[in-house]
Length: 369
Image (cartoon, rainbow, N blue to C red; front, side):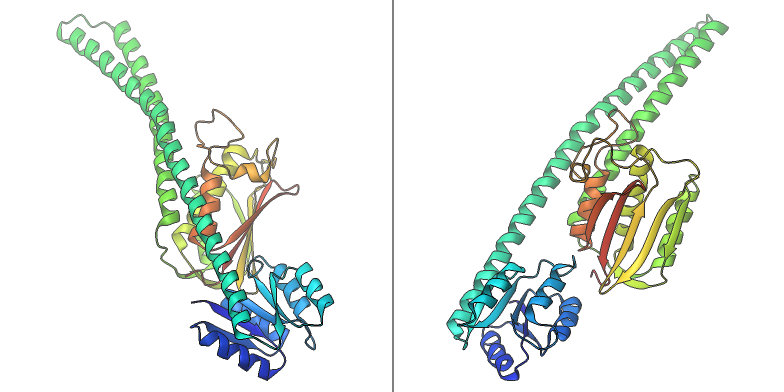
């Protein structure tokens, strides 16, 4: 059943709602004020909130507005409670983001009917999201399989040509007709074939890596305690070997998440910046980390050219790339990254273009277990 937060400054009203909801098997959190409700909502992320409109201090309308301003709690549906005669309050409640209302005095069948309606809508939404994700994943897998054929075919052709050159040289050597010019020509063509084969197999390897990352979106995560400074130091060390400089401004904090997935996300972002960012020489890629309520925010920007002739929405579409024909990029890293953030870590992200290159604002729950 659902986890439901009920908010009312009158203890008797809380007791009545608790009795009605618990008899249906729901887990109920109770708050005597808007301030307490805000804390509980951020800590427990209830499935649904039922809140009185009129309360001293933070009233129900202010509570709703505050919850809607934070990505972590913005999607929690809120049913308001109001006396039958307070129609103006009901209109105001719906305008700030309430999804329904319950009138006082409480009638158990009405309370349960309105709660069940919202729970069914949430289930339908989750099903639609899963179906959409599955469709996107299928598109990605089919697309990757199709894209692999071209570089794989080129590599096979290069190997076949290389094999033919070697056969000619071996035959000439065996018949003692091999001359210096023929050897030099054969070796040069062999070198070109090896380079062609290496380039194309590297591209195949990139696609295989993407396939593995796509699979990670659906697999169970393995959360562990992650230290922000240690995580980013490992990231910096890994990329310093490739002469890529990363500047970090971060708090020293711990949180629960799948560390490997986090590193994959940042590796994808850096790969994408290098392939498409048009990075400014002398400027390091920047990562800033701050702690906000019950989640941790990573702000990534690369000091590059930002978005050119492409929208943030298009960036995360499968096989969208700002540099067609770039053999080092497969047009999937941003899409996979977005799915890893949301589906694998339960986080959220925003893309923007504010003069420091492409910016990713990534919010990860402190406990994404």
